[in-house]
Image (cartoon, rainbow, N blue to C red; front, side, top):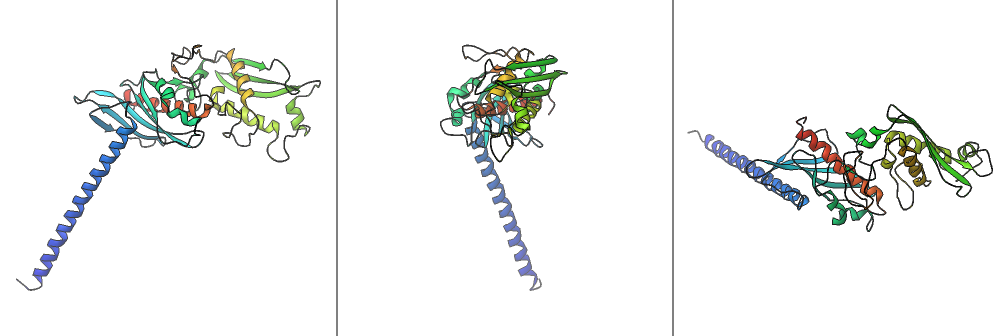
Length: 335
C-alpha cells in the first residue's frame, strides 16, 4: 500500500466517525428538546385534559394558533383537542390553553398561561373562580352576548348579530347629564348594522353636541381629535364589530385604548347601542342569578367576566372560541 494512502484512510475513518457522532448527538438533542416541549404542553393543560398520546396538528397559516393536538387514550380513541391560542389582552399578548370534547361541542376546560394583565384586575382571569366556568361549557362561550366570532364563524363580532331585524333603532338617556342628553341611532339592513349616529341634545338649545363640535363651539382639548371625530371613530368601530358587546373598553373608567384618538368615555355609547339593538332582537338571554347557562340566542354557554377586567375577560372568551373554531374544523374533517 502506498505510504500516502494510509493517512488518507485514517482521516476518512476519523471523519466518518465524527459525522456519525454529530448526527447522533443532534438526534439526542432533538429528542431532549421535544421531550421538554411536551412536558411544557402537559403542564400547560394540567387539570384540563390528559392522555397517552398527543398528536400534533398542523397549524400552518393560523398565526394565532400556537399549537394544537389530538389527545388519545392508550387504545387510540380520541379524548379531545388541546389548542393554545395567542390573543391580545388589556396589557399585551396572553396565551390561552383550551381543551374541547371530541366533537368540539363543549369545552373540557381552560387555563390562562403567559400574560401581561394588570395585577389584581385582569390577572384574575388566571384564577379558578373565572376559568372553572368553562368546565363542560357548551361551545362557543358568550360573555354578555360577546363571542369574538365574526358572524358566528370568525373573529370580531358576535353570532347574536345574525338575529337582528332590519329597521332603524334609537335609544336615549332618560335625562340631561351635565347639559347633554345622549342618544344612539342605528340602522340595520340585511341583518347587519349599516349606519350609526352617536350624538347628544344640548339642554336649552336646538343644536346637538356633534353640531357644536363641528362648528368649533365645543372644544375638549387644543390638540387631538374633536368630539365629533371621536364619535365617528366609535360609530365606525360598531359597524365593523356588528355588536356593542364586542367593543373594547375599561368598564370601570369607560375609557379605551383600542381605538386610535378616542379619549372620551365610551361606556354610555356602548350602553345606548345595546339598548337600541335590544328591540332589533340582537340581545341574548342571560341568567339573572349569575350562573352558567345556555344562551338561547347564540346557542353558546354564558360566562361571567371578572369585575373591573372586561377587556381581559373578553380576550379569554375570544381565545377560547378561536380554539373551538379550530377544533370544530378538525372534528368536521375540514382540516
